[in-house]
Image (cartoon, rainbow, N blue to C red; front, side, top):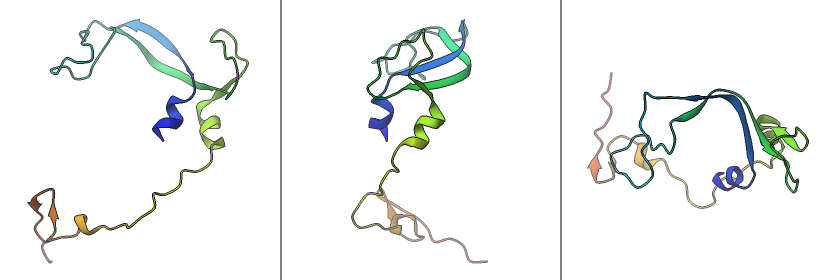
Length: 107
C-alpha cells in the first residue's frame, strides 16, 4: 500500500498557519516526537487530491487532479499475502515475542 501512496503527487488544501507551540526537530534527532521540519502546518485540511497517473499536474490549476477518495476507489484491490496464516500468537497460553501469554480466565 505504501508504494501506491508514494507514486503520485498530492495537493493538500487548507489554512497554512504558524504554530509556535511546537519546536523544529529534524530527522535524525532521537528525542523528537513528532519529527518536525517546519513550524508551519496546514490545519484544518479541506481537501486532498491526487494527480492523475501520467498527467502533468500543476498545483495552480484544477485540471488533472482527482479527489483522494475517488482516486483510492479506482485502484485495484490489494491482494492478501500468500503463504501460511495463523492466529496462534494471539491464542491464550502461547508465547509472543519471548513472553508467555497467560490463558484467559474462565467465567
